Image 1: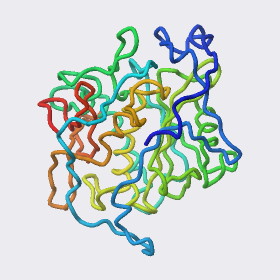
Image 2 (image 1 turned 90 degrees about the horizontal axis):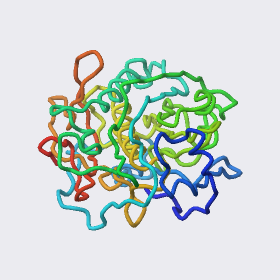
Image 3 (image 1 turned 30 degrees about the vertical axis):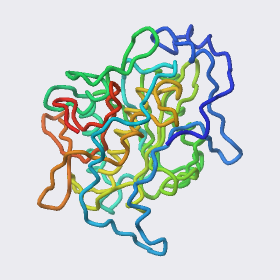
Image 4 (image 1 turned 45 degrees about the vertical axis):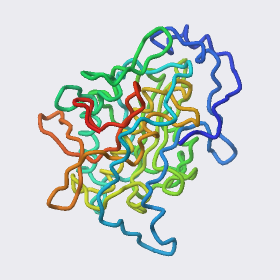
Length: 353
């Protein structure tokens, strides 16, 4: 979903480019950035939110335990969008040095979702999203690898080459009063990122992944499933996001209650993580690629899943990705946008919609 505004007031930050914030010449739009500001409640409108799953609106508002209806996830249109994505002058991320994961809350519970096994499913997915070859080419939709789907470029011709990174750094932070305990705010998410980022890496993506007992006061599970934005630490502009485990209200951020990896809430998180990573590399400072209503590439394909396969368990999957251990996992991921014609795809090889 679009932020409440994109016509930001101008603040001259040209010195950031000379301090090594960007590894390439800063486009004109980056020289006039205004950093996100948090209000009295610790929240900011300057972030891009992943809207709730359509399934949440089909549940009774009086239900104490909404159950997902067993049905095939929506395939979505194969036509080009009538409101195509376009470039607005800002930076993209040419490469991703690492993904920094901050596990917040309690990821060692007995609830069968906030578990070490659940964490491993997420690690495997983040790694898998960094792999690009003819067999596993979900990320190629965004990078143009081995496809004719186009490139997300910036002024000067630099283009997106990665949607993730095989380098994953991890930190664990139990719920602490410093960060709001079990209720995060946008501001405390940023504080958490800064605590583990140090001077920051402008080419990294920082993800705060919270366990299911953690709330986010700006609207997790009531307005969104995750979000991404940027901020300043030291002399660097860092890109970061928040994605929570939606187990408390699964239908808000999932389209199936039985999933390919046996952990429906974590599988739902992975679809949102993929969404946020792809948006971050194509629109890291919220001034590069989006359409006329402010929707980024992943937003334009949100909650559509294209061609998929049903397992005997009843779970659907549509993407296979390799793990760092030489195995593979299946996932149900939302489609991504090919920039050339603003169509949604699930695999750049083919391509497959």
